[in-house]
Length: 250
Length: 250
DNA sequence: CGCCCTTTTGAAGAAAATCAAGGGCAGTGG
DNA sequence: CCACTGCCCTTGATTTTCTTCAAAAGGGCG
Figure 1 (tube, rainbow over the protein chains, first blue to last red):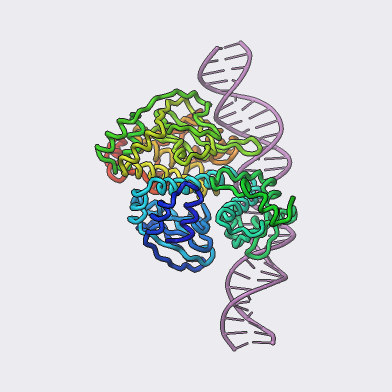
Figure 2: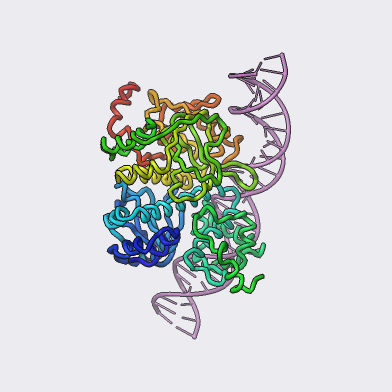
């Protein structure tokens, strides 16, 4: 079974080895999705749950005027299509922001796993509640663009960190300014200016399609980011010392 | 058991009389919450699931600058505190927008019901997915204030309609302009001006603490509202004729 | 009656969108 | 190898949208 999915659900630390055995017994397959292609489209009734194995994807909707709004990012281990339990057609689309490997598990397999272990059901709930908490935070945080941008970067850092995709305190965000703007609800031009502000404040470094965050603590302080709402095991609780060692800090 | 909750979960039309029997056997109590009081506060680990029996409530968060952002409305039958399954503290608060009667059911009771019937578990999933769909729509729709406001009113109309709180095609929204503004992320002053625009366009009538929508179809057309995303049985599918009769339309 | 809350309106200022143009870099093809 | 092309980033100038500050009017209630 998909390793990213196992890792993601396992983050809750509520799964037993029995639960992992069940998850590993699920039949799954992998598809490759090129950057810019949709993984799921509006109106789909997939029958599968899709899991990002590698790459970044996003949920989005299109407005009346044709503009796109990204309503959430999907990192490795995140899944979509779980709405299939309700038989409803999807009300938004999912697109690959970079080339992705995407795992698929049939809905019936998921239902089998949930029936076999209430802990797995709870882990799925927990992941869904995290999506919801992030959505609420995007709304709460949509006041001024610079801080929104900083907060979004902190979110992506925290989520990447949870799945061990942060190296030496540095995260590469493989997104264009247009993609970030679509997530913040601002224009690419304005996104650029806000990036410049963060850059000149010494909070991020950025190159084309890359943002580097060297000093996450400063960035967090800048936008009052507190990772609790994401409900993921925060590394800095138990291993801030480790990371400090790696960075040669303190 | 709480009648509003039964009605709400029953909207999915996937519950059998067996399921309703289970729900009705759940032990519950009712508390009264005055307008302006919190039902749940940030950091709470409630142990109960709370259900609005009557009145309107809202989820909200407080920003660094002290301003409030409403991230969702709760109408009769809607519930909160279900996050308790994950043992996480609440990351936002719930407040009564008007005087409310609120039912409480112990978490363990809910878990018993879910264990006894997968249909009940699915109904809870469905309700959560509706919350999420609404959050996504708030983000998608946050482009220009007039249309956002119109869209929000359409949402509240659709949700009220689903629980039979629309009379003769007219809905009374018992919210102040400040409360609406907190939900849209705009100032009360600007909310007022946007209301004026809708009023002068003949789309709504409003008095202090009341918005009347006489012609919902015109309002929906104005902001391109389509109720599908709410995933509630739309009345206009099966009973448009009925409502038309009541209104004397067609 | 007087107070508080809500609504309403005006005027000035800030934030973001829009319009427009130029530059860097990678990949493609001659 | 180099020119061309497309995509992304960057910057400036103007306009629109929303906020902020200020003030006043209406209604309900002790």
